[in-house]
Length: 190
Ligand SMILES: [Zn+2]
Image 1 (cartoon, rainbow, N blue to C red):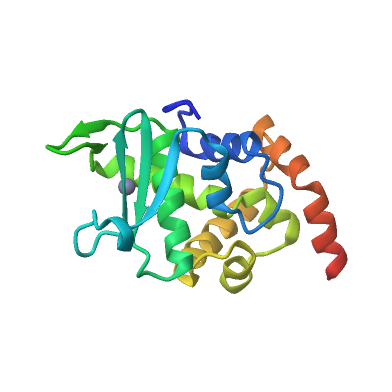
Image 2: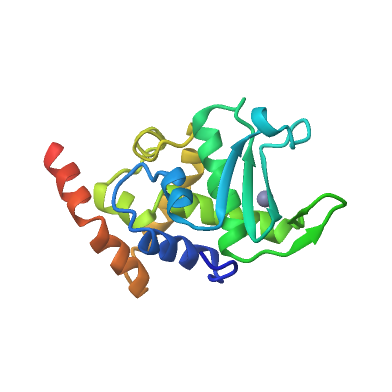
């Protein structure tokens, strides 16, 4: 994966879904990392690099991104943390030097972009739209994200459903196609 390949957070999440051939929920963030050639992942309990209260960080060394996540947090939270760090990497956010290594500068605009990327990657709106998954509980279960994150998604879905302007971006159309089998199998379940 090229660092900084993508620009806009929402488009980046679609492009990531397409590039990594993600075609069902829940999105497996560890599969994305396994397919990439320059991203590795570590539990903080193994490497002890996080400060108290930190959920995750990325260290850049020897042309490799090392995502470290706080594995004492629950798995749904960990998934979001890892997706957030992938957002920093794919969006090409600013790396700064610390005495030991390079890491992402903490800037408010970049943090919110990384959150948008994580949300759109783990809970792609057009797939939720096709599945008519509009409640926080359904979204949390389908996407394997926390109820807290799913409540934000529920609000966002309400806005998007009101706007009702799907598939204006060709990337979103491609994502919809890629999830076709999954959407059909889920719809048949109902
Ligand atoms: Zn961040």
